[in-house]
Amino acid sequence: MMKQKKGAKPIAVTLDMARRRIRIHKETLYALGMPAYVQFLVNPDALFLATLGSDKPLLYGTANKVNLSNREICAGHSIEFYSKSLLDKLMEITGQLRMDRNYLLTGEVDRVNRVAYFSLRSLEQVERRGRHG
Image 1 (cartoon, rainbow, N blue to C red):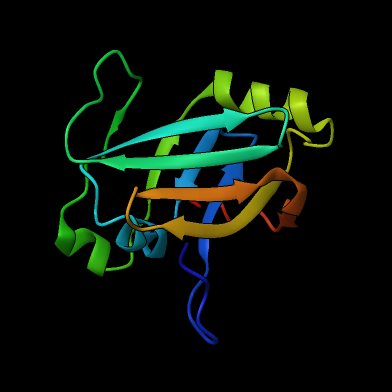
Image 2 (image 1 turned 60 degrees about the vertical axis):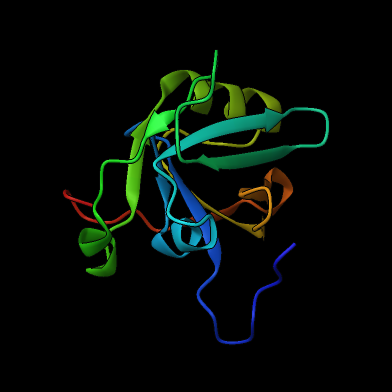
């Protein structure tokens, strides 16, 4: 697994509970090899969220298309996915998420398998951004 270098931007996702949005930060996308698709995986027993990157949709999977060009990502864009059911599940298994908060998860990447792992034990509450954030 890839460990964070000192001073490097973290491998991270943000959970925006009010807007039912999962934001994958651009550094995470780079570490996953700029996938065309991502799939979210949850391990409720180990309290982990994983993001699996792929160049094509997974057979019988629930992969989400990444709709940003390399140019947009270089300009500072992250990608966002909306999923009430995923965030409701995370709320259920952690027992600590609030609907009016944002949470940051930092993790590690397995570059060979293109998977980013985030421990739900490391949830960090972050300030909500303005109306368009």
